[in-house]
Image (cartoon, rainbow, N blue to C red; front, side, top):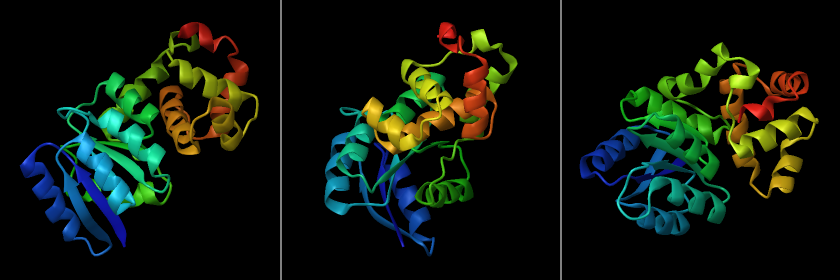
Length: 210
């Protein structure tokens, strides 16, 4: 049974998600929180497998809450469920340690599938969120813009370093490294780390595009 905590400041959203989760035989909605602070506290008490996290909330926002939860609860996965699909919010959430990013317009099936996917080690991205990265396929190497952390991860990947070594050198979790790699794959239009490493080796000047 996958234990899920819902964090969202809208009553109707929390109620609807609780009902959706309760109707799935393999999911257990262990609680709901109305803001980031409550979500952090409940994650520590309930030890959920997955936290469905909204981003825009009063007080402690979803990005800050995500970072706290994944740092303090290594066994918990955070799946963002928000109304925003802009690049900045997506990158902030992934950088904080979120392992997936969905929009609230997603179907019930998509939400349930994404929850199972993050537990299985996947990184589900809403099609609109993925489009933010896929548009980079039309750009030249010099026009593809990476964040500073993405540059570091991609450079180390190009040097042949595994995720564990990258996480140790950068002082971040392996889950965060994986989230950065997911972003890099989409932005480059590649499907795996081997292709991304080859891209980095062939375009040693990619950092100039930042």
